[in-house]
Length: 466
Figure 1 (cartoon, rainbow, N blue to C red):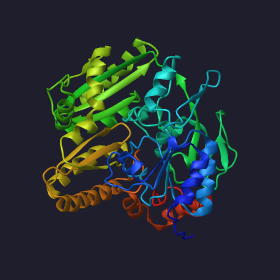
Figure 2 (figure 1 turned 120 degrees about the vertical axis):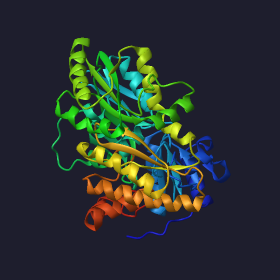
Figure 3 (figure 1 turned 90 degrees about the horizontal axis):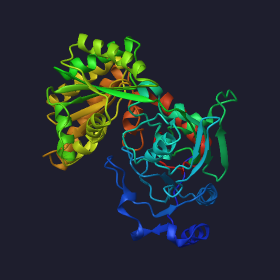
Figure 4 (figure 1 turned 180 degrees about the horizontal axis):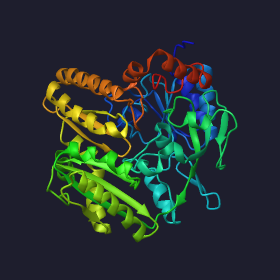
């Protein structure tokens, strides 16, 4: 069903003002520039109205009105996404959940934490660790909201051992486009009661409903965490060692790859040196467990595998100071790359772990053939690579042409290797053409059918995902 979107007028604004106070409603020039974009995608569009909601009832009233009046709605958290998913490309109403930032319940008997969607990832970690508990998903952007993490099924560095956000969402409260409020999942460990609506919502990027509450699964907090920094002669040798590590069955919590020029970007951004400068390529491995002896036994086995794979040395990071020096650099990679260029865009592909080396090698070939700088780092342990195409000195027109050429080659190669368009950042608006090209009509029509079941008028975050 094709709907003509209604342009918001004064009557609509008056209704919005009847739902919430003026202090949480912004129109026209009152809307901050941040609401027109996300962190990277190059997609810019202002909504007509922004509302900062505080509960599900407000969202329900707003969505029901917009549904009846054909007004497009864009849900938004902190706006830290990288694919334009939280940008209002058709204008309309933007619903910001940043003020829904309350911890609702910590249930130690069921090992669950119930939160509102605006709670920050960094605050969740701090909150549960104070109670000797652990929320494993660890996306790089710690200032993202949990609602955003759920909406993109964010992964992060600990996915090798623990999995991704979907694996730690037990239940959700969601407002549908027609204003209905539903609860899916719950505190139960097992559930085989029909289709898993919860798992459809996770990763749907705000196109199926607005998340207003989440029940998260927790684990006991590991007592010991140790990292290994492992230099290799080449990046290819480093990533070729990863399948050997996985095959050893001594699985680290995280396996990251990095190269010297990205480390240099982070050093320049932070104004401090990386702990080692002996090589151009590294693996960064993390191990956790309940005793030092347990962790030591695992990392020693993995260290042997790395040395057999050609590692130049093994640096053990078993103090808080050493851990901080390494991981602060790793956490600054994206900002360091951004600071080193004039503009950039990201190819967030995921490939089978035994194909990471092939894809990394291919990025070097694309860099040469397209004649554009490409920086990469990523989660070698789960095959999720973050490949950044950098504008540098090129004009807008030349960069656009080269970016398109590079992306076409990279996404095509990822598909040939058995991979997919996005490992954890989602599709949004920016990556939609590549999803369509890889998946084809049958797959995309299934997505559209699911979208229609939740939102028959296509008003909720239109133009995203499908």
